[in-house]
Amino acid sequence: MLIFCVPVREKTEVEALNRENFRMGMRDGIPIALGYFAVSFAFGMTAVADGMRGMDAVIISATNVTSAGQFAGLGIILGDGSYLEILLSQLVINLRYMLMSFSLAQRMEPDAPLYKRLLMSFGVTDEIFGISITRPGYVRPDFHLGAMAVAIPGWVLGTATGAVMGKLLPAMILSALSVAIYGMFLAIIIPPMEKDHSLLGLVLAAMSLSAALAYGPELLEGALGLVSGLLPRLSSGTSVIIVTVFAAALFAWIRPLPQEEADADAAEEDREKVPADSTGNGGEKGRKK
Amino acid sequence: MRHSIYIYILLMALVTYAIRALPILAFTREIRSPFFKSFLYYVPYAALASMTFPAILTATASPISGLLAFVVALWMAYRKKSLLLVALSACGAVFLAERGMDLARAMQLI
Image (tube, rainbow over all chains, first blue to last red; front, side):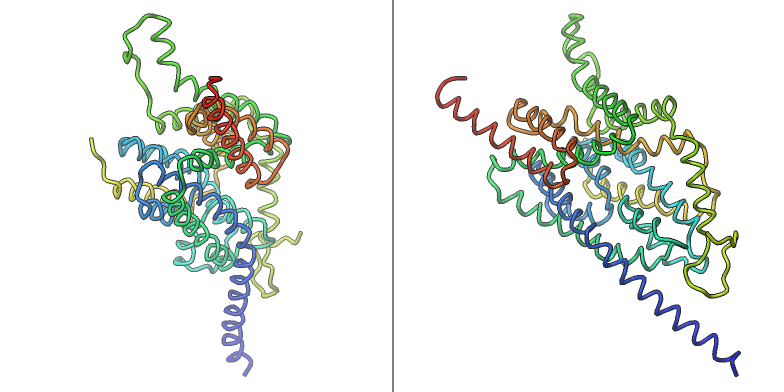
């Protein structure tokens, strides 16, 4: 009798757990959604102020859900950059999501169906990854999906609102608001420097190189008496790719992450391959914390 | 050469999704190279930094207000203020600086 009852009870239990995880994901996704609204507002507003159609900015946000990548892409599109630039810029700037997806895949619940994993991939952002990976035990697809269900609409709605406001606001307000995204970027990159001093060097190097590529050609031409326009002027997209790759590679070489940190991450993942629920499914390592 | 906005968007979306979905599909072992991990750790900071400067100088009506916004934002971020507060402070700095410059121009000081 018991043998027939167990499979049915397990299935509805699993479904109930999934719904609960989804709800918790939605709850934890709310602060992310609010932050996304603010940043994507700046994106929508900047895009429209620089001539893009509001609808196109919203489509970009809906299909990408990246902040650095979208702003970089915006620069290239507005500068009529090549398709290759768009490809390379997105590849380089978003490459870290590959590492995040690796991490999630390593700790994924073993029975997670493919369609859920593919859906989850779409929402691998810094913040959603952050709340998914720091939950103890296996990564629960439904939790991740719940966060996506709240955060991504926040991102899209923010873009739409920013796009609309961009058309309505007078020029003097727009000029002031145009620095909002840069303010946000700085708010992201400056605070971690307190703990990680290498970042200071990295940011200084990146900004110096970026300025050099922007003003260098003109200054060199003037100093050397060359014909104006002789030296190449890089588009914003190419510049971002070159500076990012060069600066990040340089610092990965001279200031790599401490080995203990990388090893500790790996060890933590091994330890936590233990399920949160009490059904017999042992993790591959099976060790308790 | 005119590019189609829709091809731009399609390429962006495809590349971004491919990057995120590949590890889930390819079942490859985790990358443990310290260099690569460090590189990926630094990339977002390098990208955001290179996008911020010197672009912030030319984002506003005048490089002076842009520079002021940069300094104000750096200070507020250093003081660990919230994302929103840093951004608004930078905007406020620009607004005040430009009104000040308008006034100075009107009084024919500059």
